[in-house]
Image 1 (cartoon, rainbow, N blue to C red):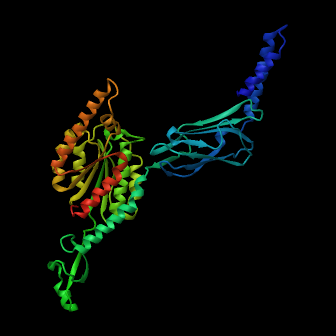
Image 2 (image 1 turned 90 degrees about the vertical axis):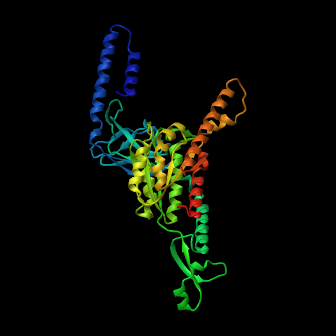
Length: 436
């Protein structure tokens, strides 16, 4: 029964005479209204006979807008008068163009389209969760309803991570070209791959002279070298409990993903091979550097569904995976937190094994709340205690940073908005100094 039937029943009861048999009159009126409701419901188009399918976007970047269209076909011989509610998870940011209470009329054999605009607020997979079709009768007194959960047809919108640090890529690539050019012209000792032959110039290392080529050309020629290509870079994302800490408007994990994407794009342009591991108590994502042209796309797809796990990261598992997969010396970049407890108990015991074979960089971000407490001017009786606690926590971070440095680990510890360019600068500095 719809609200129209209830209104009809209430209006009829209000107009009945109070004498001689009011209860009999109400009973008769109720029976008539219920009969009309049953008749109207019988005349409604059967909702289970309808066919439904979807078209539209499957992926969208966080902050973007996607459109998914619901197609509702009426194969029956009756006109469909329907109210349709297409429900998505709240973080999908669904905005249907037609309100759920609006009545949609579809003639026999006809089709209706119901577009939904989605502006997700979270990264990952955002599914449609329920579809409800309420078929009304011609008088709109009764209805039939079809409700499906999980929704059919199923549809999941994958929300890809932001890549806001892309704006830094042109400047980093320009620096990379300068580094490659300088290393080529410096001659022997700054690269291991032969590049070209050129005429000898004053100041060139005589050990780079190619005597056979010089004899053939009757001129003094020197070899130029360039840095080795196909170096190995391993990005390790810590998806444990510390990655769930929010830094501003997003979790620490999202900041690490953005930095890893910039580093991957830069290293791929430099000709290096990039692998990815996302680990907490198990390996959550694994991408190898084969198929370099599509590497960035594959990394984005692999990192999109990652979510922080409320568990301590198993650094023994991390070390075992890296050492098992990477036989050659590689640059291993850990995107994690400088949490004193987690680093001392988990990472420091396995560092000697990793540092003995690979070059290790630890990329972490400041907690703005902690920094703000340490730099704030005390204004009340509680502020000095908060400031003292913040200073103590920062001192612990400094001690952890020093312990990591003693193991040969390069530590990048900056604010969240500077993590991506800082990690890229560290990579370029190591590359320029020949430490990769």
